Amino acid sequence: MAPDFGAAFQWRSEISHSLPENNSWTLPTPGLTKRTLCSATGWQDFAVILKERKRKEKSFPTIFLDDLKQKKEMPIFPKISLRPEVENYLRESFMNKEVVSASSKQEAERKFETLLIHLSHPPSFTTVRVNTHLASVETVRGLLLEELQKQFSGFSIPVLQHPALPDVLLIPVTGPRKNIEQQQCEVVVGAQCGNAVLRGAHVYVPGIVSASKFMKAGDVISVYSDIKGKCKKGAKEFDGTKVFLGNGISELSRKDIFNGIRDLKYVTELCGRNSILSAVHKAQKTEKNLPSAVVAHVLNPQPGEKILDLCAAPGGKTTHIAALMRDQGEVIALDKISNKVEKLKQNASLLGLHSIRAFCFDATKALKLDMADGTEGAPPFLPESFDRILLDAPCSGMGQRPNMACTWTLKEVTSYQPLQRKLFNVAVQLLKPGGVLVYSTCTVTLAENEEQVAWALTTFPCLQLQPQDPQIGGEGMAGAGLSLEQLRQLQRFDPSVVPLQSVDPDCLEDAKREDVIWLANRDCIGFFIAKFLKCKSTEEVSWN
Image (cartoon, rainbow, N blue to C red; front, side, top):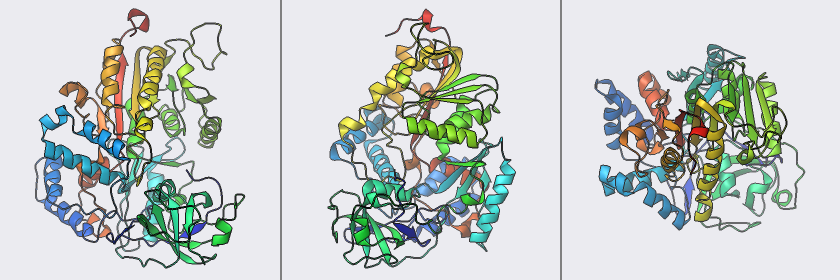
């Protein structure tokens, strides 16, 4: 999202979590273990909830949800900004007849509005996948704990190994409990740049739309996001709706920023940003979203198998698959963007994974219809060539967090379903009988998730929906005509099931491990996973 230009600002490790004032919202700066996701009262709420849980012995998820519902959610910044037609489209999906009949119209509306708020907030846990073929989980965990102790002396912040994902570590994201003073010198960035900053990126020149008149290098500045896209490029001040991201130190003057500088080299590192992960060599770990780490485990690749990652970039799932196979077998990775393929190859080399073969190729054309087509071992491929296939499909990305603003039109949001079906058709034909196909997206729309499953089961009689292991997310959402049993075989990660909370170092010692894991499993990005078994050859069925 941010080009390789010089960073314009160096962030301080202090952050803000105050409430909105006028048209300006204050937000946390999300460096690893350096951000807070709650209002000032949220710290105490989380501690009270976990302490109350200690005296209850029945079903934890039900009781814990009841406790959380009693707490008033206090978002520290507004819900995701969407075009009206997009928000209405999503609302209709989340308030469809099946959903409303299963609960109520009021409950469906509440859950949808809660989801919109969650999408603009970062998750409260950092997920680290250990590259177990190069380092043990305990080694990486020890390095992270050592760095945490250096930065948070006096607090006992855990690094938890996920009980269902043995190569995954969870780190609660914590933050200081103080407000920070907003500066007179301001910089405003575009909404997409603001999203990138919330995900840990630097601020780069191309993302800046406004800077104070007399700003010079070395000034302490406050940075805001123009979530409505109303600020004019080059403006010296902006009084419209904006979201406060945090304070930083400018590396450039206003004149430098708006005089067409495009050849800057990297200028600074961010203070208090990702410093904990830097304690571990990049070949030993990968920072991921939790559901993304679940996908490869659901696929369950075995040593010696031939696996296809149909839409592989940026390659995190590809390398995870190869690692789970102990680098024994063959993993074919396809993507049609050449620089992404080169990056994937570099990552595979860095991780010492020799089973991966990456190709710059359009996955919709990966099926070889003529024996004479293509090159041996390269795409396109003959039908029924692969034991397992991952289709992590291109999607609208409406589950990504944090995302303060999405400027897409309804046409853009709904444009992915036809492409996903085209890719699905190719995947089914390339899969061997008895093979496994896993379909996943990082979106929350019904059309790209449950509706695709219903379509696939109708279109391809050779497919059977399968239960998933591990089953960490919730069941699928009603509305696509799937049975209750089928919905239970899906995994939909829906962050709206828990209120906005942060993890307070003071309360971690009082929290049970399973309580924290339960929260981490739910306070993540919006994501969807479906697993299919191909029960017979495609030659034996008719295609719609």
